[in-house]
Amino acid sequence: MTWAKELEELRQREALAEQMGGADKVARQHSRGKMDARARLAALCDEGSFREIGKIAGSAKYDANGDLASVTPAPFLFGKALINGRPVVATADDFTIRGGAADAGIARKMVQAEMMAHQLKLPIIRMIDGTGGGGSVKTLEQIGATYIPAVPGWGDVVTNLDTVPVVALALGPTAGLGAARTVASHYSIMVKGLSQIFAAGPAVVDGLGEAYKGGAANHEEAKEALGGSAIHTRNGVVDDEVASEAEAFARARHFLSFMPEYVGQPARRSACDDPADRREEALLSLVPRDAKQVYSMRRCMEMLFDTGTVFEIGKHWGRAAITTFARLDGWPVCVIASDPSYLGGSWEAKTSEKVERFVRLADQFRLPIVHLVDNPGFMIGREAEMAGTIRYGVNAMNAIYRATVPLASIVLRRAYGIAGSAMSNAERYQYRYCWPSGDWGSLPIAGGLEVAYKAELEASDDPAALLEEIRERLAKVTSPFRSAERFNVEDIIDPRDTRPLLCEFAGLAWRKLESERWAHP
Image (cartoon, rainbow, N blue to C red):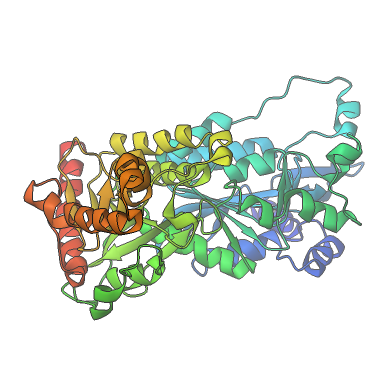
């Protein structure tokens, strides 16, 4: 006697699960330019590596004899997979079944997926397409009562944020719990024109009256106007916007390549054929002599870090600071860089929030930080005050002071005021180098000469000539070499030596970080 009959039923149930919401709904999903959940899992993970868990869970119907008649699969898929040859938990919402909302068994499936990640110390990737929750008016009528909301397993979501890398890909309209699951991540992506995120979708917002609407002509426009990627990748809710699902999968894989698999495991060094002692001649003329002229910090980074390894995140928000991952002699590092082409590099509230989040990420996953500095200060003016710039700026400064990973700063040009002091922790060893173009102080001298020397200028027969004389005199005082004489800056370097010195820093930093592993196994 064998179990052939039961195995036949298992295969039957598995086949029903693979049909997802049925041929018509799968076709409708594809007609919207969206991949289905199973295709997404295949595209994200290393080929053939996805092993599904709970495949046959769902809502079944039985005939009068108690035999299986049909199954509606649970609209949430998860399992163990490989990405870049390393184990992960991969999950995907199935929009073809009730728009990705809750169905039989989904609550426990989602909880188990989140538990699996932190208990087995595996990164988790969420591909979110739908609400991911269970609330609807019809559901309440079926229950016969309402209830105070609770999210099963949210504690596991929080634990994962403290334990393992979490990546979220919004791949369709995501509302409510789906939106929350997207935001509760270390790295998040939206697909332009395909993804929207909202606390409540247009239909719900419509019920609140005209004051809440965006004036859209149709439902598709309303979704974009309410929560499209142009909104949420500019306000910092989501990190990045991409043009296609394929690009989203590639960026998710790239992000994970810089990460360890869990907090406490060192990230991995990559093979590198870019010489650590490479010196770029173009760095010598990168910073203009005219303080009002800008230059490309992104071009600078491409010259300093291992060729082709600079991976920027959060490009469209907090734009006065560029946040990237990169490699130095194969070692992974987190990079913060001023962008003098936006607000002159001044940190406003959103930039400070972005820097704080990135520093915390680097410290949590034990990645050294490189800070390329050209910051004239926190943004000033009425709008900056109304946005609470100083609070966000101090939070960024506090994150830098709390961070315990090694940090190296390169001062390319300006470092002024409280923002200048936020570039590194002055109470720790300062692994810092300055370029000859360095210009720093408690405030920019050039902007305060008329006030500081008001009496002398008013008494002068030739105020313009006197002002120019004062400028020339102070230019000598503000020379970076005067600071170096007093050891207020450690070293002024030839800009062409920056990469070799940063590669040296990366080697020493990782020597320290790997020693932590043995001290705290």
